[in-house]
Amino acid sequence: MKKRSIFLLAGIATLYFNNTYAQEKTPQDSTRTASIDQVVITGNSNPKKKIESSTAISTFTAKEIQKQNPISAAALLQRVPGFAVETSGGEVGNNLFARGIPSAGAYEFVQVQEDGLPVFEDGALQFANADNFFRVDNSVSRLEALRGGSGSIYANNSPGGLINFITKEGSNDFKGTAKLETSTYGLMRTDVNLGGALIQDKLFFNVGGFYRTDNGIRKTGFKANNGGQVRMNLKYVFDKGYAKVYYKKLDDRNTFFLPIPLVQNGNDLKEFPGFDSNYGTYSYRAISQLNIPQAGGGFFNRNLEDGIHPRVDVLGAEFKYDLGGNFSVINKTRYTNINMNYTGIFPAGGPQTMADFAKSEGITGNNYQYSLVSNGAVVNPAYVQKLGFWAIDKQMNNFVNDLQFNYKFDKGNVTAGFYKSNWKSHQYWNWSNILTTATDRPELLNLVDTSLTPTSTGYSKTYNGVTDMSFLVRDSQIQGSLNDLYLNLDYNITDNLSFNGGIRYSKDSYQQLQT
Image 1 (tube, rainbow, N blue to C red):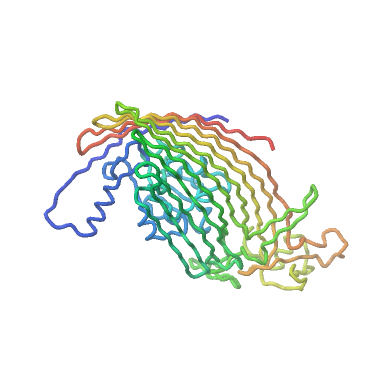
Image 2: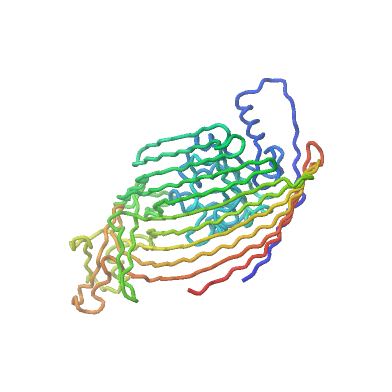
């Protein structure tokens, strides 16, 4: 499948005034002035102050990020006006919606970047939300979030916004930060960042990252979050530009929390009997192991404690050179490789009484018997719950290159660029359903039809608590290729009035591969 897209942005102007007042400035005034005077680089080729930008942009410095101490990238993005961020799933796997643009979720129509290139080209692939592959730590220098405007000219798939996490670089001053954080729910986290000069004014380095272990707010019976990442870069500066190389390694594991049962009484919501709505979850240790036979032989094994577990390797480079005569060129390139195991519990409807569930399985009357898988004890739970035990494996890679030429003149600048991206995603699904007690510490249940003998067909409705073994198995691959051309003009009509306009032509192709 091939697709051609043209994005046109023109006629956007901004009018700003520089007024002088007689009264003294307050600390709040100074802070506000410092904010609007910050220089931004996202969504334009010529760094400019926020007050001079023709588009709405929010920025967060490293100090501001540390002050907010977000538990995830999505939690930080909740602070950006114009974005609605749904974070109920935990640290990752969250959804971001741009104001005015209908979306199914994930990071559709908003591109998440790291140092000016996408974390992954498609931020809305199945079970591959962009925040699965990015973490905020002390190595982040600042966040720039652009809403609309020139974002769709400088980046693919970004009519709703462009989010750019910019990482720290070294300087002539050798400096670093170290933070040890502890809190309730078993949280232990350490963040470290160190940067400086290997050769004064020439060669600089920066290395940083974090490691965190955390039980999670909801009681899973295991470590809900466990892992970390490291980033490093090396930058060489010369008379007419610079060259930079960098590497990132992410290996983190996070539990994905899904809906819990509640009782609705009119407009009021109350706790479901036996389920703690504040701290309970179906993602519990007693049901965390899955071991089922497969049609082709062998067994499929999965551990819920692995959660969403991405292992990400990123290698990139950036080069800028002054060609003379007000011309300059900048090229950014990156290769990303991702291996991710995704394991989660997805409720299949609401809780049911023992009789109702038995009836749905074809058992008549009271000819049913429930027992615990753990010890075989016969039990009579008030309610039972059918849960989806979903296992997904994804192997993904993405090569991207952005070549940009810029011409600067007295009244503004013109930018022309060519963007190339190739990506591939291979996914394997193996989904089963399990039967448990409808409690916040669920236990696996077996169900039998007592009207039949143990040797009769249909006597047992479960296999070690599994009601539907591998009911959905899918092995699929897709690859995409993007070739984009873009042109943008920034023009200062007067000292207080500026114009920004641009066009982007995108030729995309997608192919379903044989597996």
